Every structure is written in C-alpha cells, then in structure tokens.
Length: 407
Ligand SMILES: [Zn+2]
Image (cartoon, protein in one colour):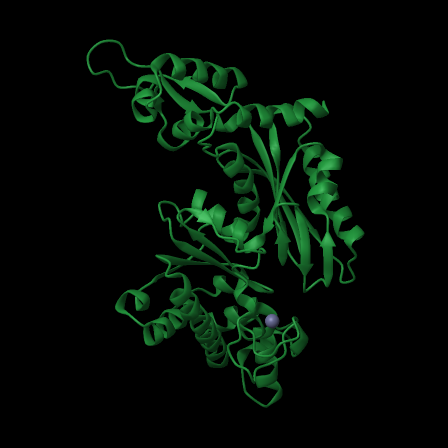
C-alpha cells in the first residue's frame, strides 16, 4: 500500500503531463485540439498524454463542447471530486485538520486544542492524532486517491525539509513535522508557514485569484504575512520573508514574545488587544464589556471586544480603531517595501470587520507615499477560519499542477 500511495502522486507529477494537466485545470472544459493549439504540442502527443492522464483518473471527459459545425468535440476536465488532500492548520492553541477534494471543498474536519505546556513530541502526537481521526472517519476513501498532507504551521518553517524552526508562542524549536508525518502516513507531506500557506489558499480559492502581486496578512494570536510576487510565494533567503509581526512600530512599546519592544504583534495581535482593553478598564474607563464579561476581566477576548463594539460600546470601538491604526502603520511599511496590488486580511482580528478595516484604510491613506500606495486595496479573507487549512491543501495542489519546463 505504501508504494501505491506515493505512486499516484509521483505518477501524475513525474510524467511531464503537468503542462497539460495545468491547462485543463485552468482552462477546462477544454478540447484536445485546443490544448494542442495552446501548448504547441503536436495533436498525437497531446492525445497520448491525455490518455495517460485519463488512465490515472485525474482527468475525465465531459461532453460540454460547443460544435462549430460538425461533431461536438469531447471536452476534458479535472476529476476533482475523485481525489483528496488533507490540510492542517497548526496554530498556537489548536490544530485544525480538514479533508477536501481538489476543489478544496471541505468534506470533514477535526479540531484538537493544545495544552499550554507543549514539547516537540507532544505536538507531533496531537498532529498525527488529528490526521488519523480524519482517516478513520473516512475509511471508505481509496487510499490511492489521497494526494497528500499540507501543513500550515505558525512561526518560522524550513520549507525544504518541512521543519518548524521556531514557534515562539509555544517556545518550540526544530520540530521535524514532514519526516514524522511521512513516516506515519506514507504519503507526500508539505509544510509551510501559516500566513504563507494562507496566501497560497487565497491565490487558488480566495480573494487572491487573478492577482499576481498581493500580500495576505494573518492577524490572530501572532501576526505574519505571505507575500506573492509574480504569482509565486516569496520565501527570502532563510524563510524569514513576511515576518511582519516583529516589525518595530514603537521602540518604547510593550515587550514582545521575541524579546524586542514595540513589535507590531505586541500592539495588534488578538491577546494584546485584550490586554489593552483590560488596562483601560483597570484604570477606571467605563465599558459595556465589564458587564458582558460578568465582571471578570480575565474573560475579555478580542471577540468580546468586537461584540461590545457592535453594541455601541465606545471604549471597545476606540481600542479596535487604535488596533487598526497600528496595523495600518505596519501595512504602510509593507506596501512601501513590496508594492502589492492588494492586501488580504485573515485571522481572528480581521473578523472585527469595519471597526478595524476602516481604521487600517484611513491610516494607509494618510501615510502612503503615492496615490497608488494610498489606495492599495485592503480586503478581508474569503476563506475565513479555514484559510490556513485550505492553504495547506493548496501546498499540495501547487506541487500536483506545477508546470515543469524541463523534460
Ligand atoms: Zn517581536
């Protein structure tokens, strides 16, 4: 079984059917003749390669072609519902795994909360457990139709070796995620930083479609960004690109988990917004939220602040507005560095809707260097809470549909 599992993935990849496969994915339904015209391959070559693809079942014929006089051409489409991918979002407080088809339609999901004291071994154990549960619950799925597992891991990730180099909130280093999962599940495993995986998910299925230059910013318990340049993820020399959470916004600001002061993350990530709110109330500010939290300041969360803001609580609205200003300053720096066409906001904080988004936009308008910079489109993620897990799925799709020029 082991060999077969690697087989279905390798087979589709290795036979340089990628060019055709990718064309069917992006332009399908498409006929053999059209593929030949667009790829400049000869019709017999296209026919042979298409036959191989149909044999693996990843491509199927559908009869939707329009006739231009004469017989209707047979059209080709991707058999997306017949193959599966597992996407995993490893956050600082929980692991969320989804089983999807190639259209990233979520068929099943498992969420497991992490305990506060994590070790490398424990994290890998929970990770395996969540994936195992998905397999057990969907045992009727033919294992040969599993393409692989894509893991969106928070913190800094060595993408080549699939190692979590540093997860600051959990205080873990050098977790061999890829090696561990490949050993256990005997299938292709890809690991990527969560914000970058999210960007890929948005590029394939969300608000980043048809945009070659954009940035996806994940604002949750931490803050990170995935940068897409020329339609591809940008990693930098050592996988640090996009770590905007540790961009200094205020050198006199609060201490960050990284040890520096005034990082964007220490001013605008979820837990820090709640901290600011608690401080304001402790200093005597009045707010609806005191009552909403039943007088327990410890129960104040970003979500509760949002709920209070919706109910018209002015202190909550002010705290969210301030958060948007910090984010806006960070994003202006990012816009001036990368010059994206749009910025997609994902993660818990981005759910605070217009309270934060309006303030982000206003700040960028005030600070942008040019009219274009000032008017950079800022939009919320279309994939919501599933963005990172879907990003994990996209990691495998990128491999599967990679266009290889050699061969
Ligand atoms: Zn920091």
